[in-house]
Length: 436
Ligand code: S3P
Image 1 (cartoon, rainbow, N blue to C red):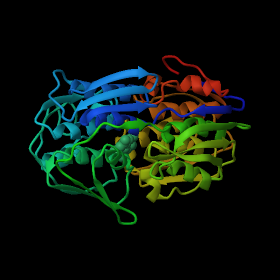
Image 2: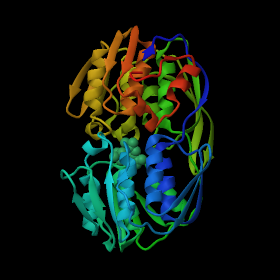
Image 3: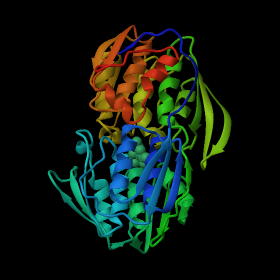
Image 4: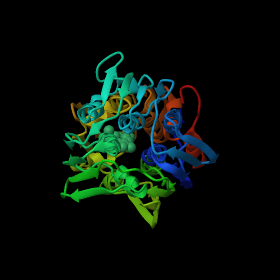
């Protein structure tokens, strides 16, 4: 439960980036030799990926807080037991791509939320490359069995900008015959391309302006390396959002990754009039990072450019929470993908915000929030096993008139373990518990 707080103030460090944490374990498991990881996000999603890659033959050791060592043999093998990826769409989709490249059989499943998410977007192109997928229960949904090996490269054009689909195909392409080519009409996050290069693979990227073409020659092997995981902009968004909407606040989040394919939310907040400053820009682990300071701001509603959607797709829930305090309408469109994330995030944000007294219009591929000077709150919100829906409503509760509770708050640990303590350390009033 989150209650109206007086100002938030202080400096905190963002938890490790979820996308890069998954990849560091998976690529380390695929590589030959040792991969040393610093700053790994130790969230439930990532721990599930660590167990999965170890079940497929890599040696995975925790050396200290955020410090992990993965020793790979350059190949994956059939796991004995079914692999449970928990809540992690990125985990299961990338692991299926990696597994497809080897002559192995692996069963994958996940929690109730993950078993509702579409998988054909990944299994379709992987099957075109030569892998076999057997649906256990229902087509397009986990659980399923992957039979890999003997792949041929494909030329694939993405219909939606999805880094998960792109990454699964590229990982399979490492062990395919021929050159795998992916055309993205809109750019999705490029962590796989950058990290494969750091692991010694040759990835060719042809920039086409709005989109790009990524090519990778088959038969390449990866070599273990060191990975320093930068802070996650998607997690940094929550304390920064709280500072923007709780009067008198000033919060700095240090070490936030500033990859332009991830920072659409910060650009959007600045367009809405947010007092957001980025300092200490530097390079760390192949990515630009910086420290972001947010001060309480009277935000103004805007039409969020649809072109920005891929660079902030996970951030619309927290954007909507801040839009509830903005002057006028915040129009968020071209975001149908939000409906197939850890939950139907459009439906849940619409329901949760309405329960808190906020005016919201729902559209098929978007929603519009009309802000107000004060938000009533005073609701128990369904989060449907979705960490970002839970955190977004708790942040809203810090500035609402009456407390806001969320169901399934334990899901927050998938991406942001320590969220409650961090927010309270800044002066927020969040009570942990079954219905936080
Ligand atoms: C991710 C890609 C995005 C994002 C997810 C993480 C990744 O999904 O929503 O949280 O690490 O590649 P899509 O690729 O399906 O858009």
